[in-house]
Length: 82
Image 1: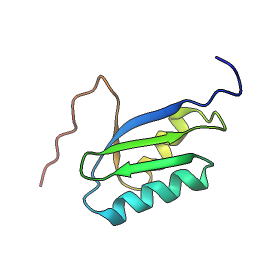
Image 2 (image 1 turned 90 degrees about the vertical axis):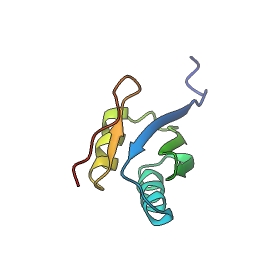
Image 3 (image 1 turned 90 degrees about the horizontal axis):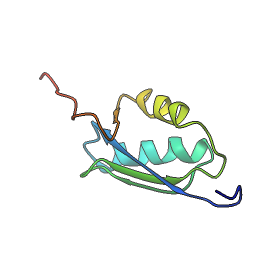
Image 4 (image 1 turned 60 degrees about the vertical axis):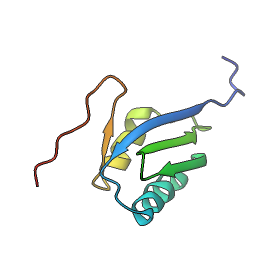
């Protein structure tokens, strides 16, 4: 891959229940330098351009610091106890 080539990153985030949740995740990613951030709280989909090539582990941790769960593609959804 060319170092100038930008790829959209995608992840699933559980626990977002409203547009304010999505806005919080979006703002956190933008503060980390992510671009073209799109967060859909209804589906849990988060997409962004990682133009700084930050490690995905750091990005995942920053979202989880907000209280959400980032689900890996091969993991089943987390069960919640209410």
